[in-house]
Length: 309
Ligand SMILES: [Zn+2]
Image 1 (cartoon, protein in one colour):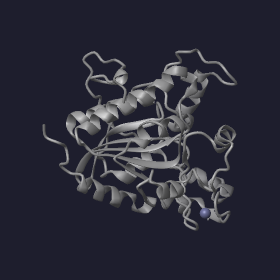
Image 2 (cartoon, protein in one colour):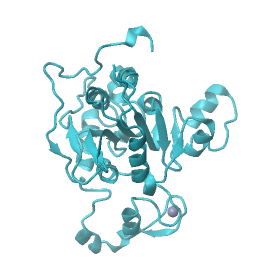
Image 3 (cartoon, rainbow, N blue to C red):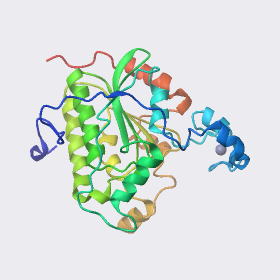
């Protein structure tokens, strides 16, 4: 990385005397998506079944949800909320959230079809989250590690100042405490409501990751559907080990933009995890049902690998 971007510390917000914030355990999933009141559900029988997006079979929604949100018929991996993902990858009640109070600010006073303020309010209400990433520390089979999980429901898990700052603080905390680092990505890219501020998060998070990796500490990325644009182009592609869920869309720009720019015919399925595994960007594809056990194994492999200086 160019010396221009090298800094002793990359987190920028409220730096004076700051210590990592641990306000408490992660709250239960917000009302919505996967946490539907069973009594309410009974009153709406038409909501019991749905047509699978991939195989078009009628699937009992509860069966899909109990199967880690994977279609029991064809194995299609539906998106997961951050809370459910954390539940999947950590020991019970071990997750301690960091920086839970950081909230985005509408610096540009962005107005469009809807204002940024309006979009933020709607996403907060829908997800119960304050922004698109949840970060903290946890154990998995007793092994402590730092974990960041993006939640696509919150403005397409786009990266603005808060997402960038929370990722950066997590990386810097993991470096300080010599913890393995795992980030589960899902993102539509940079949060354009924040203009240049969103774009600089790419350099900021990448800079922090470089410093973390210089200590010889392991950084594992779990790419989920979809991981695109500015997140792919920064911390998501910098893992020492990059794994992905089956069928995940992974890319930078959309196919039409690439085709128009390069004037080339694009190979079939070139933005899928499977294609990128063949090309070497992805190291391994792991089905969700095996993710917990395999992550635990990876944390075993990487234990005590910090370089002592
Ligand atoms: Zn299906």
